[in-house]
Length: 236
Image (cartoon, rainbow, N blue to C red; front, top):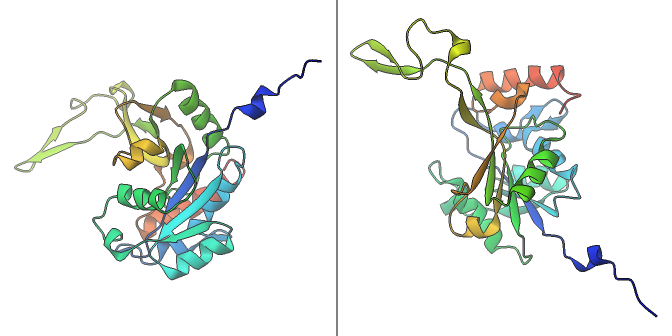
C-alpha cells in the first residue's frame, strides 16, 4: 500500500515578522503616534494593516520607548518590546531598533517587514503584491518608491542652479526619477542582523497611489493625511 505524502505540509513556511517602530518623542509634532487619525490612533493604522495579512505575517511587534504607545499597541493586539533609552535618541538609526527586536525574540524569523507609523495610508493589496515580488525575485530586500516629478536644484550666491532639468524644460519631459516613499520595507533577517535594511540585492517596488506622498512629521502633514483618509478610505 502506498501512502501519498502531502508535500506542502512537509515544506515549512518561512516565518515573517512585522515590526512597527514608534518612538514617543517627536520634536515637530509632539505625541503624533498616539494622536487620533480618523477612528484610530496613528500607530494603530499600521497594526490594523498588518493584521489583514495572517497568511504572510506571523507576528506583529511594536518597538517603542513610550508607555502610552505600548498600552495602545497592546490594546490593538500587537506584541510590545520596550526599547532602551540608548536606542531611542533623535539620531539613533532604525536598524538598531530592528536588531534589538530580533535579539529579543525566541522565534526564528526569515524576513522582517518594516511598517512605519508615519506612513499610515497603504493600499489594500500593497503587501500581498510586494511580498510576492520579494519572494519570486530572490532578493534580500525590497523598498517602495514613487515617481519624483518636482524640479529641484541648488543655490549658489542667490542663483538657482537646476539639478534635474534645464530652465524652461516641461515637467512631463523630465528624466524619470524616483524617491523612497516609506510605505513598507521587506528585508531578510540575516541582513538586519548584519546592520543592513536595504541591501545591494534590493528590489525597488514602484507605487502610484495618493498615499505615496504621506509622511507625517508636521501639523500640516497630519491635516493633509486626514483629508486623504476621508477621500480614499475605500482604497486603503
